Length: 92
Image (cartoon, rainbow, N blue to C red):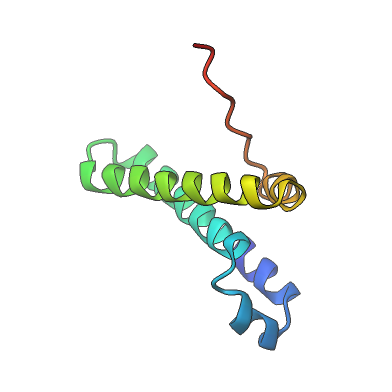
């Protein structure tokens, strides 16, 4: 799985220290979102999972907004690595 390859890159000592980092949390939420999306393709009427997915997406959005304000370079690298698109501003 992608998560294991990402974690294996980080040494064991760094992993324990960095699990609270914004990048790790966004990565973890992205994996959860992908798993839930696959689940919802099979089980279209699973509304509790759908609600959980929306909550996780909101958390990831808030973390990405924080990271983009804090450090734009790390934000760009992270969305490039995770292959997620950047949220565009509304036209209105």
